Length: 71
Image (cartoon, rainbow, N blue to C red; front, side):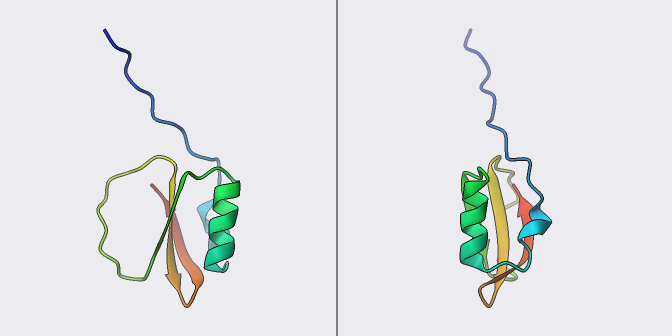
């Protein structure tokens, strides 16, 4: 019987630390801290609700991160 795959973890990071940063700087910092996927979205974007380990999401207004969440 094959083993059950274990999803990779995600960095121990504080999403609120990205709020107020420039979008480019926030993405660079997130990748440096180990996030495998960084997603930037404009306010009000319709997205699916599936959780993806290792992904961090930024809501961006005028090139500034205004909200951040994981998954």
